[in-house]
Image (cartoon, rainbow, N blue to C red; front, side, top):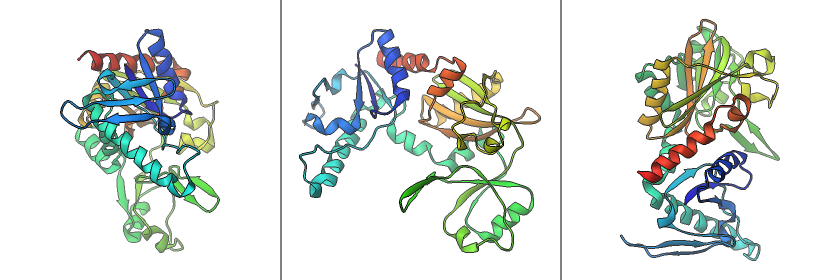
Length: 317
């Protein structure tokens, strides 16, 4: 059995399910919000058993030959659970899932604990630089004086070190990469509030998304410069009109992308680059669990097929 761990709203997993069906491979899509309806048994030991009984399916740990950790949601307690106990039940089911993730071990496409580790952006930049990628001049700081000196040397952009969503009041705000200006009127206390990533802005020709699956590399350009609203960060607008095109990545750069992904202990990675006006690629970051469905739709890159082939390699190992 091939296990896809995600949530019921995840459209990207639909691509994987369709490919598994096309190949006639047995699978289970585990939407983790719905796990509280399961009946679970585990006898911890070296020969222990793990079994989940769900309304429409059941599975034993020994049946899982390969697994894809996509976008699991938090468990949603059953309606009959009293309000006072709902958070407790949610956390207990979450702990059960964490134990399952551990027990699956090396059968993951990307192990969840390595996904979490690979999200460390300072480590990403350091590792990428050591592998020969060009990275923009970067400062991570909350020191107003250091940031002012950094900004005085040319236009900079800022982005979050970890969390891209600010929740407060009645709404959430998404923090995109944004041009940053520092002068004498800038509130120093707002800078000191927490560290941020600041980088020298690279004049773009295109944004480039590279998706690595095993030893396969799929690259695409995104024409972010065709719309002023997306010049700095193409994610700022859900603009279906931004042109996407297949991009032929130089072989040496493709090899570096595979090496970076492997160094992080991953079989899958979504890497963001800037292609500058002179044709130089600049590494921005790697998302160890990034979206890719829209890239397949817009370019025809067979990413779902590559992921399922990689899962088959895991299953047959």
